[in-house]
Amino acid sequence: MRTIREAVVPVAAAYAVLLAAIWYGVRHPVRRPNRSLPVTRRTIGPLLRYLGSLALGGYVALLAIVLVFGVIIVGGDGSLADAAVDGLFLLAVAVPVFVLLTWVDGRRLERK
Image (tube, rainbow, N blue to C red; front, side):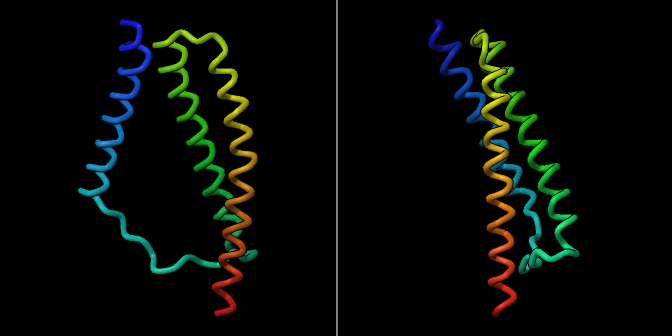
């Protein structure tokens, strides 16, 4: 019974959420612009605001998932604190790398 509670239920719930997201995405496609704007002094502010809200939302979603599955269902003692620290590390690495690669891509597009 413990295996069902600790492994099957979280995996089945995550799979159901994934299927719902795929179904919604197929039913409601989003129009994308043909090409992105290069990162300049004019576009850096909106980009950083977008990345900040995206990173904060993802961080809160990560902590909510760990809270539900790692603390409430499984009963892990230190899993939320570990996820908070590890999530901040991921943000500290991923956001600057994304900004750098976006800048490099913008420079590449300017030269064409």
